[in-house]
Image (cartoon, rainbow, N blue to C red; front, side, top):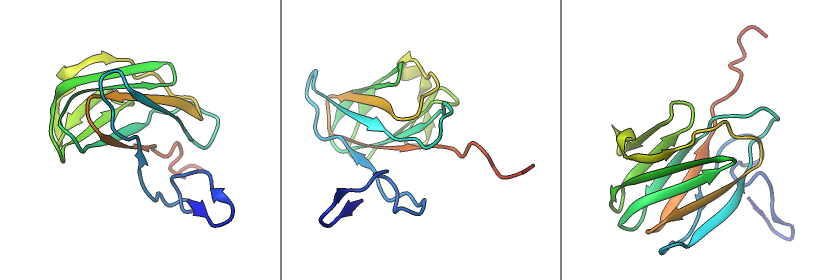
Length: 140
């Protein structure tokens, strides 16, 4: 969130009271170009995020390095497509259809808090990371 006179308020993806407010934009990639950021995750235990990518340009691959894992998805993608990479299940879905067979690298390792992410693609993609709650409140 932007705070007038103060700049960005962290974490970037919440309104300050726990509600997710929006995606992380990574800009346009060409060839070997990439973008790097830190993916915040509250807590100190490793987690298995879900990366939701909206495709804004025609592209044929996405390479995502998160922590010490590397995931690559190779398949023609079109404007408006949604690619979901799920660390817990080690799967890839494109527009709701299982496309895990198109994972050419599948390093879905547990992700430590505040890990660095690098995304490479041959088109403009928008990426949002989601995390499942570690505790559901039962048994407390």
